[in-house]
Image (cartoon, rainbow over all chains, first blue to last red; front, side, top):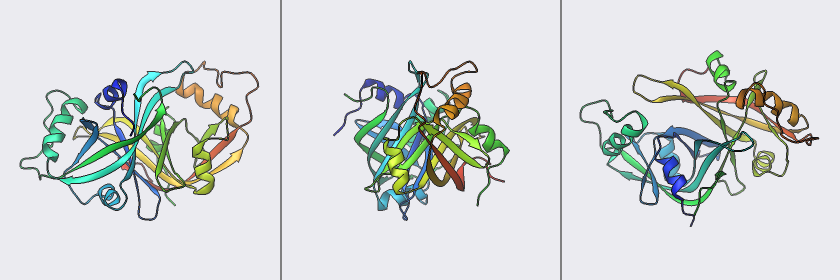
Length: 140
Length: 140
């Protein structure tokens, strides 16, 4: 099992957008940009609606990849980036609380999100890290 | 066949990094960040080496997705983004010329890339757009 190092954890929690890749029923790739945080060693994302293609994909095939752009440029002028390969699981509830926590990073410290009264409990996607790639030094 | 609108073409040529998703032999997703430009209606990327997992993946299964972050934030505080789903083809030659053209956008107007004398002719990946997604208005 691969383990994210401190630099990878900082990038994930920096407000960098997560490009979440799932696999469609026909085997083709699907991408959605989501907010992601850490819960222990897992990556977590929140969804108010359960009727999303990415959630249906994960329930059928849990293999996902998540990529993040770093602000750091290497000596060749190429931007560093992190790719996390893992297995995802969808659980019920907790979406508004996680979205509110992540909104403080992704929008700003005073953000209120989701922008509605009485949001649904929604769903969380929890990703267990299996392999770490990209361009940069991201694993322990 | 989906057609990119002017906003999508501007984003692709703005120096936004392309998250290129290919499918591994076991059906799991693979992501690499690459420079991408337009050649007519196709997206094009260049590779000095042909021994890259993404190229082997494309030769086996041409279905790819490419995602780009926009700098624009919508009314809910969410960043717009573009996802291009398409079919990729790997052709021989032309990599140094395309890399030099793209380096002027991705690094800077005076960039010299690749940073070596006599680079190999390499390979191009040409992506034909089949479906356009993401968050924003990107198709004609």
